[in-house]
Amino acid sequence: MTSRAAWTIVGLLWIVAVLNYLDRQLLVNMAAPVKADLAIADERFGLFSSMFLWVYGICSPLAGYLGDRVGRKPVIIASLVIWSLATLASGLVTSFEQMLLARACLGISEAFYMPAAVALIVDHHTTQTRSRATGLHLSGVYVGSILGGLGGWFAEEQGWRFGFIMFGSLGVAYALFLVIVLRVGDRVVDDEPRQHPERSRREALPATSLPQPLRSNPFRALLSSRGFVLLLVMNALNGAAYWPVRNWLPSFFNAELGVSLTWSGLYSTAAFNAAAFAGMLLGSTISDRLAARQPRVRALIPAVGFCLAAPCLVVLGLGVFIPVLVACIFVVGMSQGFLDANLMPAVCTVADVRHRATGYGLMNFVGTSAGGLMTYVGGRMKDAHIPFTDMFPFVAAMIFVAGMLLFAVRPTRQ
Image 1 (cartoon, rainbow, N blue to C red):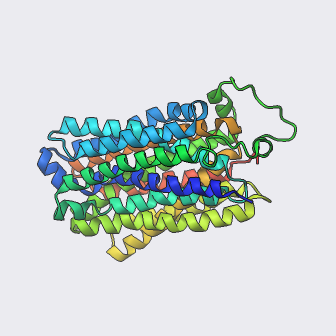
Image 2 (tube, one colour):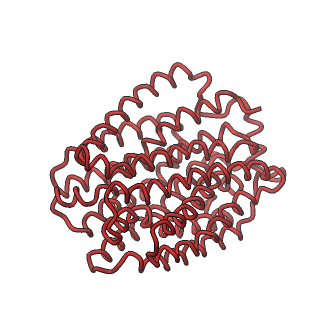
């Protein structure tokens, strides 16, 4: 039986995950008022998202390493405090350079949260609940992204600065609450799975394997695993494809299809993440039911999702009837939910227990670095008056190849 403490961890971190994505997604739904206030064009506006993703990616391997070596809990709390202050500062900037610096600080601090958080969760959950626990935590990501889709509404009703100041302040307050709760609950909410150390070792290592020395190089160990490398390349393609879609879809609906700021955020950001939430629930439930008999299912479920999403991305490039576009976005979002619920559990099937946070950090590094590059390319395309619809066939091809790579992953651990 999974302990109450294990689910308490998921509940506490769910709110942090909401704030994590809400803070980063607010900006992309406020393109018009922010560009007007700061007197910038699309290329510079795209740099805000690219800067965030680049520094997020660069810092992610170090973030994962510290999560494995320093401890999950202090990394999580410090990350929340710093990115909340960066969010608050975003609502006070008066120039392009100041906003770029605020987004860089946001990327650095948020990079340290996710590897430590998902590692803490899988440390306390067995094969029977691992995808559901990871998925429920990441459902906060979808809720935060959906709330971020209301950025256009905030901009129209309260001014674009209001949301940054409000949610940045809430993040600082919740971090103080976590410090108190986690300190009081140290005997329950612990950084290490001390209740079942033998179980954790059995799940992480094959029966014929000897444990690696604690001081072994985690990067070398991970990159020597064929399965992990396949997951790494897959996540790079996923980031290159889906991050520009996430970041530019609101502008696509607003600027190219003539939809208002409020509805463009709902059609794109909110629809994508609502679908991802549904995909997480479905994908995690199926995965946990089948993984005990067939660990490969952790990779197969998102592989199927990507193969279904690829033709829908082609349809998006046609710019047809808006209800059809929203339906395609829903399928694409569900495929992302399939991956989010199973990525860390899939890493657990090919990586040592002591390298989980580092492995997830490397996943973040390749995914967000590629996503930042493609988001910047999207901004250059818009400034050159190239329709965003021209990018969708390339995005579809990348997602299809990512699905093929997932089909090739073979677990080496349980």
